[in-house]
Image (tube, rainbow, N blue to C red; front, side):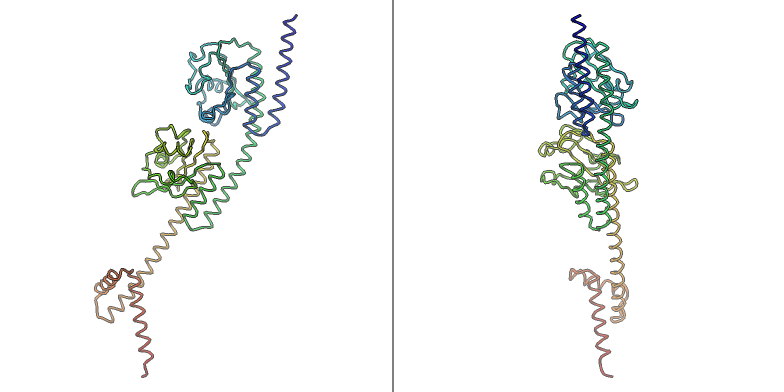
Length: 412
């Protein structure tokens, strides 16, 4: 009888916690806060030594919360759908309970940097919402543990409640992010349309992008096609070490690979990735995650837009699309400004040619020179005086016009 009373009391406590969870998680629109409440409740009710929560983004499960904070790993550790026990639970939409020797399970994927992955027992439960997988919550146990049906059902019930709250918070986060994205895209478009000064355009683009994405460093590198190098053209970084980084060859380092392949490239941690050419600068400036997006006009890359964070960050599909849009607008601005500059140069060259042609005609008439000798005379005067040929030609024309005016003013 006493055992039945104990079980009833335990059931009552579980229901109380479940109701408290429902009230708490649905009362917040901040995703990180919702996730913290979920793992706290799972840890208490499932009596787990550690709890990790992964969220599905595209076809990857990304670690988004842990009962014991892992600031270097949250947002960095990721699994493909179907990979590891966590990926299996998400793919098959079924809980996985491993009572002992968890690492010996053939589905298990070991992350040596996660202390939880040395656990003896393991419970992975898919987080669902309206029949779709939202993520997976994992309970870890240092010692072997038999999982009764009641524990699995309880964690599954929490996961079902959590799924709706997570999606609700995500919708709020997406709406807020999209409002910010529309604002920054509007500003970038305004800059591109209103200014013909390339340097001004590029600096405004990196400043607005860094502000919108809360990035410590945003830089824009332009491609020198003749030398096959990327050179920093604009950055809002105050770091002298970063500003004076040497040019990068196309196909080398992260930015060079993004330009070569014409695709965005994400590096979870530049301090430890061998593809990143300047890990010392990254450590000095406290840079962690990096998103490199090529600036494309049609199928041609004109450069790359780099976005750094100071904390490990899993760039979402929406974030990558936003930076790609900004990068492409920057590419259009660069292309249009260069085209305008070339047009002005061609116009000036044509005007200069007309002036030189007129000066040649004057010399041919006044001095009886051939066309070739008249041209060489102007050219020689230009070289001797280190002045442009147009300026010499204009002087010849002016002198001729003054002579004509004097002749016309003489009494007859």
